[in-house]
Image 1 (cartoon, rainbow, N blue to C red):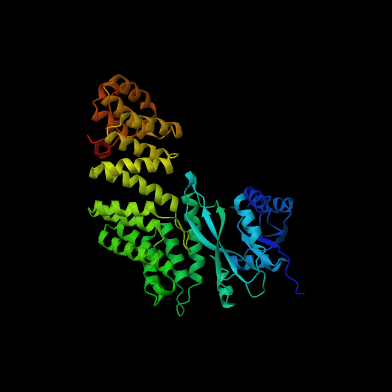
Image 2 (cartoon, rainbow, N blue to C red):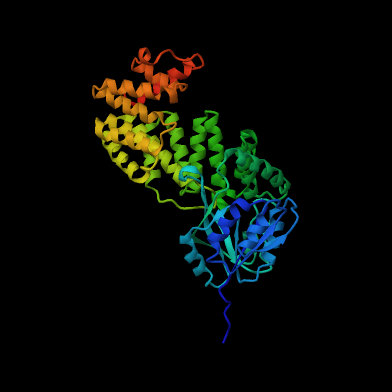
Length: 464
């Protein structure tokens, strides 16, 4: 009678000064973990205490500017047949625990890919598939000093990655300035990994993405082009090539080379049809070239797509949200009333918790001459967010004026001056409806050019 390995799981981590977030991570994975190992790379806060308090075995280690070195220290101490690696700012949702426990029952001869969901404010953030759970074998180790990977060694053993429905939430990339700092650090380490005699498309696209985050578009373009110029990249690494074309398309949009942008986004879409962010960028380029109907069709395809995580980060939620906002505006501008009504309802059903959707749908209903529905949208928008929500107040005032209730509009305009009196959009609205006698002179620091821009926007929004 052959003995089967006991279904057990080692959770392995590295950490430095993560006391503020480590506890919630360990609490979230505890129901699935049979042992927890934390390699501490030089914390000066309470990271060690928090780890030990949650039952982790802590291994102190020096930091060598090499994530693989530290990760491999953690997995060398693992005693279970399966290993799951986490970051300290990860959270494993409760619904993922039963799935992980079921994966522990599998024969340890494969790697499990899990959906990593980068959580940003307001429920957005990229999602991608990453190899997170793998057999505890001496021949499987992390490689590369930065953006470390387990799959190259697993592939050499003939193992494949099986994509699962397990979700891991990552909470470390909310602040754009923090992202720039990390990208700057990453570029320094990534460039050390470059082997001119053995071009690596994954490494090159990570370098390009880091430069893009840093705002260095020239270097980003150089490295994206290196990716697409690697022979057979598009056939062997289609998702990576798609990411490179996406980056090149974004750069072309910034330089107003919209024909080039459309070509790049089209190539990216062909290589990775699941990417909704590519479709959104393509729609932007089409609109900027005057092809509004094609932009509408592209946005409609995006909204109809079922999100599917791939090997690079895609912000499905943000893409769909932005798609609704742009689509509703375009349908209004094109006068497609039937479609506008349909997508107003759909947008509310999917994203009614977002104030910007309530405002855009409110403008849609205003255009469709449904003032009561529009009123409810702007009121709900203010129930969601009051501060920095001048769009909702402008919507309410526009409805009051159309209904002949000028006194209500005057009262609202006067009341919000103390909150929005330094915004060009406030004074644009005041000028459009001749409320200057009511609220006084425009402050000297308000740009006349900005006021005129905002007046054009408001006139388009409310068909004035």
